[in-house]
Structures are given as C-alpha cells and as structure tokens.
Length: 457
Image (tube, rainbow, N blue to C red; front, top):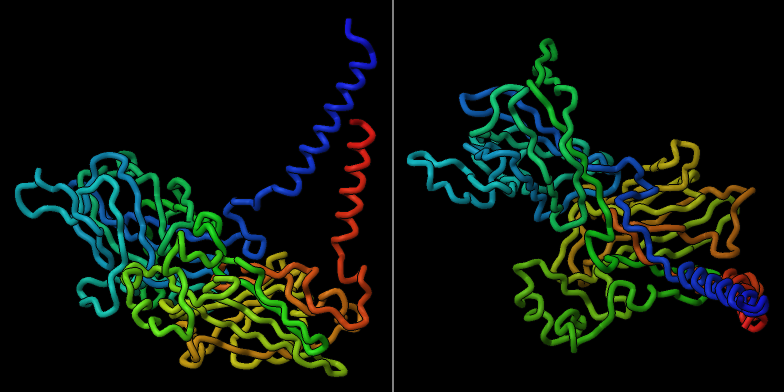
C-alpha cells in the first residue's frame, strides 16, 4: 500500500500540472475559425436554383446568387461557382455564364453539350456580352456589390439547361458539394435544401408566376480560410500626444528576401516598374511596398481637434499594393461615439446595427462615386481621406485610456490588425497604471502561479 504522503505528493503534482496546462491553453488559444462575424451575424451569400421549365431529358433553371453580407463584396476577377452532379447530368447550354471546361463529351455524336464534367466550374460573362447571351443580373465579370453600397448590383444570375437529369419534382436530383470562390477561398457552402418556389412578377406587376421547384444553398465566409495572414492594419495618432503608433511589426508578414524573394519593393527602387511587371502580375500576386508591417492596406486614425461640444477625427486609407486598385472599397469601424456622427467629409456613411438596433456603435464608410470610390495602387494617388465630426456625449466622452480610438476596423470585410492598447497615445497626465491596463493583472497571475509552483514542488 502506498504511503499517504506519496499520494498527497502525487495529487499536488497533478494539480500543479493542471494549472500549468490551463495557463498554456489560455494564453496560446488560437482565434476562432468559424464562419461567423459578430458585426454581421446574419451575413451570407444565398444561391437560389429555380427550375423554370422541364425538357425532354432534364430542365432549364435560373441560378441567382444574392449577397446578403452588409460590408463584404465579391471583387474582380469575380466569383467561381462549382458543384458535383448527383447523377450523370450534363449542361446543354448556358446564358449569362459559362463553364470553364467542357470535359469529355466524346459519347455525344453530334451537337456536344456545353459541359460534360461531373464537377463543373462556372464563371460570369464579361460586360459587353452580346444581348442574346445575356439575362438579367448577368455579365458583370463576377463582381457582386453589397446591398449597403449598391443594392442594384448585389446579385448575379445565369440560366442553365441541364440534360440527362430527372424531368419531374420526384425524379430530379439536387447538385451537391457546392463551392464558391470569390475570387479565392474563404466561403463554405452548405448542402442544397428544397425551399418555397420563387415567385416572379411581370413588368407591370399584374401577373405572378413561380418556379416549378427551388433549391437554396447558403455560403458563409471565414477570414481564416480566405488567407493565412491579415490584409490590413491600423495606426493611430492624436493632437495631444506626439507619439505616432504604427501598425504592429509583421502585422501581415515579415520582410524576408531569402525565403520570399521579391515579396516587397521599396518605393524609391530603380527596379520598381520591372518588379510590378514581373511574373506575379498575371496571377494577381500582391507586390507590396517594403514596410515594417507588410500590409497591402493601412488605415490611420488621427484624433485631430477638440471643440467644446464636438471632436474631429481624420481617417486615411493608404494602399501599399503596387498591383491592386481597390474598386468600390469599404471600411467598417466600431466606436461608442458613432451614434453622434454630425458631419462626414468625402465618404459615404451608413450606421450598422449588429445588435438588433439596441446599440449604434458600428459604421460603414465607402467612397463617393466617380470621386474616391477607386483606391489606386500604391503611389502618390494611392490613398483616400475623410474627416468625421462627432458630437460629445457628456456622460461617456473622454480622451483617457484610449477611448477616442476605434475598437475594431475592417477593410473590404477583413478584420484589420490593431495596435496593442498598451501602445495607444495617452494623455500627458495619464498615470503609469492607467497606461498599462493589462500589465498589473498579468503580473499578479504569473506571481501567483510561481508561488503555487514553489509551494507544491
């Protein structure tokens, strides 16, 4: 029988190991990878597959993608939609889109189908497509806007004629394994579900027809799946402190010409133009300006002026990517004083209420049409600026503890890297304890842990 002291000692050792394991897990836990965004909890892209007529060996369907995301659009070069057929279906013809590959159609002796692949990939047609190859909401090069910015272009459609398929509601089979690239990875699509038949209204609104059968597919976005590293960062400054807080070092990557040669270029390099026109130009590979943060986009938030009843902020968005012009860009920020925005210069603005309208602390900003809705590639013109004038709330307004800076910032739907709160520009009268809000709790935690280890070990 083991001595009591030995059992107690092993119990203390186990408890000590459990504490250490909990501490390691707590401080090294990775960020969530779920396709959920608290600022847009219901955001998704819904694909509606509406069968509008039956054919001798299949059906004709209208496929429409609706962008129900508040601030994330699908930019150029556009969407790519894929799926797997449930049986041996083929695509006889398409209007408003095309399959990227025809596949093996050798068993058809004459008039081969448009596509015979079991897992076709579909892309939108380009603007300027002949009218006899178009349908409504097609031919935008795969670009889909957000409802907030441009509701008239927040959907994309095409028509597809499917053969070797079922010809009734009972025999037809839904496609499966839907994929959506927009234009790269990031979206995860669920399975197709039978929904209520879509209704169509005539141009005069006096007649309503409906689809013979409708399927719905929901696709949600995850920034973690879209790219391994962030794409934007935030820097801060203020009128009451000379400190300029730059983006955290290596926010979007680190300069490494050994393992990643040509990943960045200096703005004064004599080889700048040849680097821009290098091999990565055709593939759209980013070429960013060499910086400490290595992000394609930097958003600078400057607390500019303080008035009696108002305060002013200047926001500057800078493009460091030499190979990308951001068309119809947008920025989303979160700040408790956004419920009192009084004046906005040179940006469009719309409040977002992700919490059911109870709290108005989130705002979406985007450029004005034909003025600054295009964020040019890196260079003298590669920036957009605006100023926000906000009314003070006497109960909440303060310049202390970094209150004047945003809580979160997004660019084109991707969360940007923020500086550490410890580095924020503080008021000159702020105390050391006020400047280091996390230092004291962490010090207490590690001191208690060290004492526990010393006692039990």
